[in-house]
Length: 115
Length: 114
Image (cartoon, rainbow over all chains, first blue to last red; front, side, top):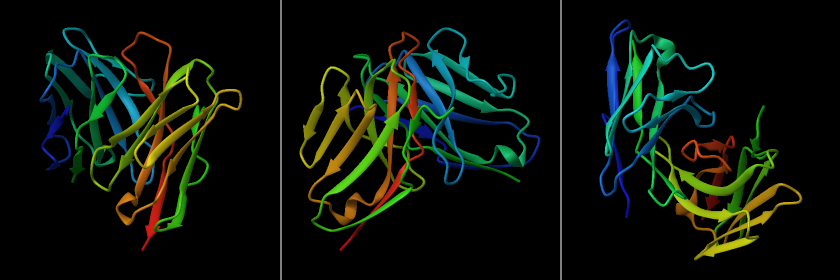
């Protein structure tokens, strides 16, 4: 079946540095990928919609200059958290839209801890 | 504005019995609904979905019911197994072309006791 892979699964970075998280669709091409963030005991919150070859669409309240999204190919989208702060520590999850348009599969998620 | 709500943060069920997870939505433009299961520190796993043109979809132990007039859907798991213990999210997708973005409920922690 369809598989979406995220890397790294866990990352610790120093405050003020940048960190990149990759999201790959392994068995299919994904023209659209989504990035979510989940704080403890809260729901998944959509951060942005990433379309291959175009600029990402960010949700209200999400800083596009802080959370850089690149969707350079049909199988890879990246999220770069720039100038990370401790409050950015969270569980980041990507998902990819199956070409049929009805099902979205999720990556395993990436734990980011900013110290 | 919480457009998808799961009012029960937790549910505890005995193994072998039925688990019923509920979800309400407010946006009448939603036309496709999905249920995901999520274990701690993992991404959600797709379980089952239903289109707004249907009122029931069944897949093995999982059945989703949709009541459009009440804007309510439910996930039934029968028989429940300890391995079903996880957080269950319902999600809805609108009639839009912006890439099928999903709106999630808050999640319900299901615990199936042996």
